[in-house]
Image (cartoon, rainbow, N blue to C red; front, side):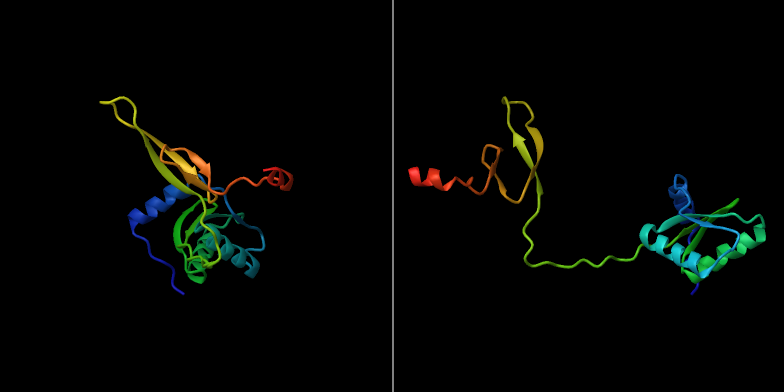
Amino acid sequence: MPHIELTTAERRERRADAHHLNPVVLIGSDGLTPGVSKEIDAALNAHGLIKIRVFSDDRSARDAMFQQLADELNAAPVQHIGKLLVLWRPLPEKERSVDADRKPGPRDVKVLKFGRPGQRPEVKQLRVLGNQRLTAGGQIKRAKPKQTSPKKRQAD
């Protein structure tokens, strides 16, 4: 498979994003083995942008590894500086299973609290959980009544 081509602006942006990253995969004296290629592929699937450290002193061998990895894994070669290689591949779409029985989760609600006339209202961001409701006054209440013990229910 041919590797992905990046424009110079895209390459510059990827280099800037990779600056703070630590190497994820280390290539030792055995060179580029199938196991190492598999690990690099897994790291690209997980992160998208990775750094690889090669412990070989031969620059031409490192350059050949860089091109071979880009071709095999359908990745874009971003940077080869010293013994570090930077590869990028877009992250694959993750499959999301739709659960019909799933109940609603927490939701964020903005509440306006009006003060004196002529002043701006205060905006509060509240998180309302699935078993809660928001009252007209901007307070959070439990949607379900609290359970009482059978003895207390019997006494009433």
